[in-house]
Length: 326
Image (cartoon, rainbow, N blue to C red):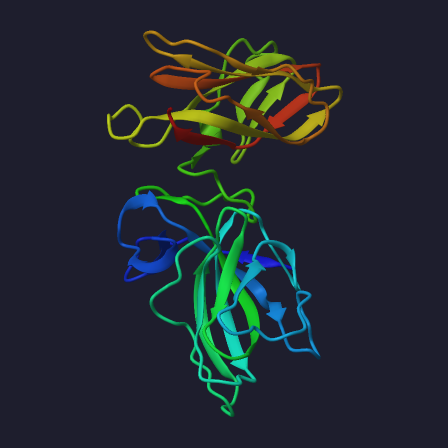
């Protein structure tokens, strides 16, 4: 199952979906911050259930009976779907057919209260009755379909699912380097320009260090540093952020050149802590230095990259990921 992920932004009259009272409600996405689910659309809808005897998608081959609450697993391998376990709701198209009596169907998270309003109202002899249904899931990824009267078959197709996400519309919550991944809740990604690299004790100076249009070059063993600027509100008293990860890329490690050690350390009065990676990087590529929450504290931060060997190291733009402190 392939996915197309989307993020809501407070632009125009966009609408987001939020959980509340055991169900799902639509709210205005112009609200500037808070925990609200985002929608992840499937490239193609998948069939979660089809209770018709001739179909039996999801394992059931009998209609729902009178006053029956049928529990459906909405996440993981289920029917023809495989929705991720972190989904908190589903956007579905439901069709009711073969009703033997006037009835109604109600969808709600398993274990929750039965809604006062119905989602579908099939009648005997009527053609198949479709309707769009947004349903929340319980902690196990389940929801119930309750049939009021008689017998009725139910077909459930999933077009999208909802996942929790923290919105902070002051910043772009988009992971530019990993198009199919989400940043964590509240995390913000910052890009640092190559010109921010500064030399510190390059052996082969002055020719050993120069700026390329999109890269920084170190010729021979030495050290370069880059200030890591955080989100605009860092230290402003609104929301304070701390670095959670730094991604650095080397496009060239030639003639025995290697990255010897990478360090992120805080600066300023009362700065404490250090995050370090001593792994020798001998192949070009992008590497992550993860930083535990609370490991560093300072009014500013700097990335220090030490190179080894006599060859040429070419470094690209650095990306840092920041999360709220605490």
